[in-house]
Amino acid sequence: MSETTEKTRIQKVTEMEAVKYEIYISRTDRTPVLFYLEESDFLSLLDAMKEVKPNE
Image 1: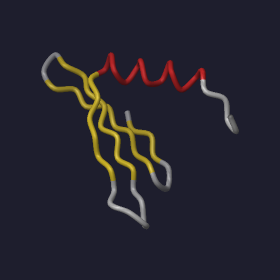
Image 2 (image 1 turned 90 degrees about the vertical axis):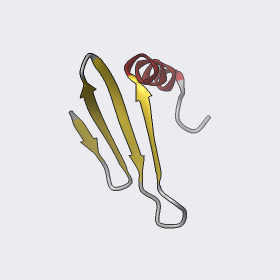
Image 3 (image 1 turned 180 degrees about the horizontal axis):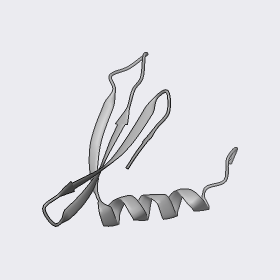
């Protein structure tokens, strides 16, 4: 599974029995960001993002 936008890529990585998510944020004005989250942390992040409303 991979979702890509102009600046962001999210890739599901399965290693043995563990699932991680690789998140890459490309930025032209600063150093790009690459980080990994375990599946439970990634799902927690998604839940938290659902609660945030734009322009708040």
